[in-house]
Image 1 (tube, rainbow over the protein chains, first blue to last red):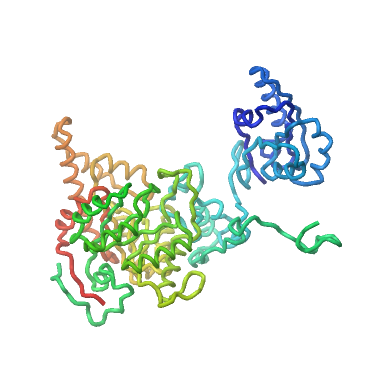
Image 2 (tube, chains in turn brown, green):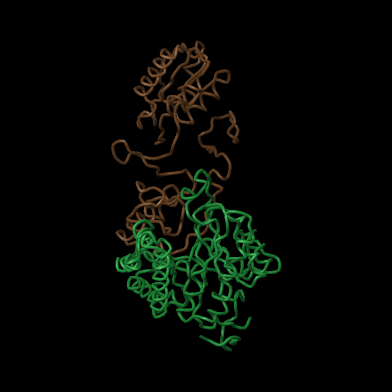
Length: 231
Length: 336
């Protein structure tokens, strides 16, 4: 899932300076699961903003709402009428959600309440870790199911740097060394020989380096839509 | 040591770069490399001062590439100041700051200026340096870099496969190895991988535990890696007991036996705490003495072809260490 965390309240308040009536809008998918922008978090943030504005004597009306997925037209389209009464939306969606709203509602200011962090998973209560950067060309078959592209600080393809110690990465003691994990799994699975081969330079054009990415699947296009993916 | 102007044996293989370091190693001489850290400024004089401390006491000197991710004068620019002074540079290049385009471009330029030695590194992470908010590159890793540079040199081809007009740059290609870093069982294999990728020579992380290093080298030799490359064991004089403890406790991949820490602690015993200079000098003398002993022990380890002396910001220590280790004068080996 996409993992995000809330910006601090002061930053959010600075963004909203001068606004009179704002809709705090949560998202019912990834950020609900990672406890950053679901119904509860949206209600708590809206309440904090109302309280802070009362204390400072800067009247700010904040209502709260949630859609199931901020990243799909069909879910955000239903907001059109509701949004008319607000002079801004504070999105508790990920960066995709914020941009979906901005694209759908070109005359409305949309502000991000979250910092979108990574694609990852909860590894224990209150801990989330990155697992994928979406490089567009998966190599997990070669690395025993552990990704060095997302989990090695130097994105090494041919083994650990000298900073691996006791299974941890020197950049952050709380982070395990991806190559330590890869090696351990290779030893356990009898895959060591595969790691002896030199992995050649990666073609990064499938990653963000090739420019913003899109997928067009002709088999899913509707009659009358062109293959460029334009409706 | 050998007399000057010793010629290469007739059976010697054709040289890849003709660098002094390559010639010394190809002639079977025990090589000595040192390290010259560029300044955090554009002060050419400070480099010339360091050159005088190293010239004649090593076969070539590594020029670090923004080491510990701190901005310093560029490695290649520093190397260009060394060449006319007669101190052969080994430019270091990290994967942190350059993509494959910049790497190849800089290497073609370096070769055009007569630079013949290169050490390929991943690079310290920028979070340890003076610009922790910087974006890193890591387009390719150090092993991919070795293979890329070897193909440039031997096949005259860029990483893209396109031809380099007039042939490839004659570079003597090196890599680093960290024998004691974790996971330790992988380390000999990683060294072999670097050799297979193209490492003509290897410089290791600091070695203080010779017994453990001997075990590592046995594995390296058994894997057949030692005969396909030249391995220079890394050594460095300890400056103080504090430095010994810091290396032991805080630097990944460096182990310092407690016996050496105790020797450093004992070195200034009997010297009054207020006599700071006296204590410093006692520690420095003991640190250099330990370094000389390590060199002598490492020379006897099968597969070791030389030493790499890392006396960071302590270049004055290199000459006395090399001299006491019986490695002066440095051999002069005829060119290709």
